[in-house]
Amino acid sequence: AEDAGIGFTLLPTLYRHSNFGGQDPTPSQKPFIHDIGGFLELLSALNEQADHNPDQSLGLGFHSLRAVSPDDIRRVITQLNTGDSTSPKHIHIAEQKKEVSDCLAHTGKRPVEFLMDEIDVDSTWTLVHATHITPMECDLIAGSGALVSLCPTTEANLGDGIFPFDIFLKTGGRYAIGSDAHVCTEAAEELRLLDYTGRMMTRSRAGTLQGRSGHVGATLWRAAAQNGASACGRQTGAIEVGARADLITLDIDHPQLTGRSADQILDTYLFGGCGLLVSDVMVGGQWVVREGKHPMDRQAASAYRSTLTRLFS
Image (cartoon, rainbow, N blue to C red; front, side):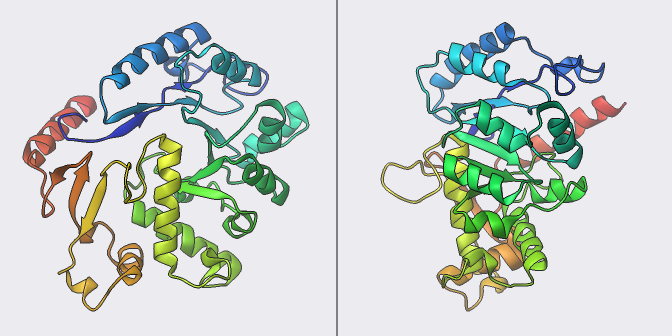
């Protein structure tokens, strides 16, 4: 990442059990397992590394309520001594219906409801997926200040279900987008699928705007950029004094942008162009991609092919 000029947030993730009630991990899960002490040691080592690199940030993840208990979460947060209570915290939640039914059977509560009752969730928290939530849980999330990170292409690929985007927006909830299983790594494509799924659910073309005037693509992009920065604990997501200069530029000479201006450009990028329109990428004030080319393109592609050949041989 340093060689390629990528800025990122490390989110080491605690994983202890196979299901609610502290069930033993399966053999395939054992490589991911940490005890609390080992996990805290990992966080400490990574914190020292991130302190010396302005392109790196550190947060922490809890895989899910079936993989860690509320007591596990409280112990880590209580014992964590990074000196920064604003570190981002992520947890997968209510992704699939079985998770919801298992949580109800074990606790008598749905996952989001159970989390909110047990943990002091605030604006430093990101709930990943939250696919199967009720209007009441939408209110709980919005009221806590937490945000939901949606992974539309992964949720579609796995057949998880459809997030109640329209209901969530009406509560004032905040959302970001991610890739999770890396089915897709194109932010615009994720946002397009999120919006189109919402249109099919509500049979409305502008539900994202919630009755306000504006441009759907620009509204989606700005919200995801600002909330994504919050989810990652980084000073990005807006072009303003004090923010990191992590930017992309679009090829304004591309035929698809002919005649476009202002927010029409973002609309076209999300709904018509995606990665084909990206020209340059800046990270921390340094250009790392110019005119669609990275100086390590060939070297990186060769190393990637060699790695895959070794892994699959």
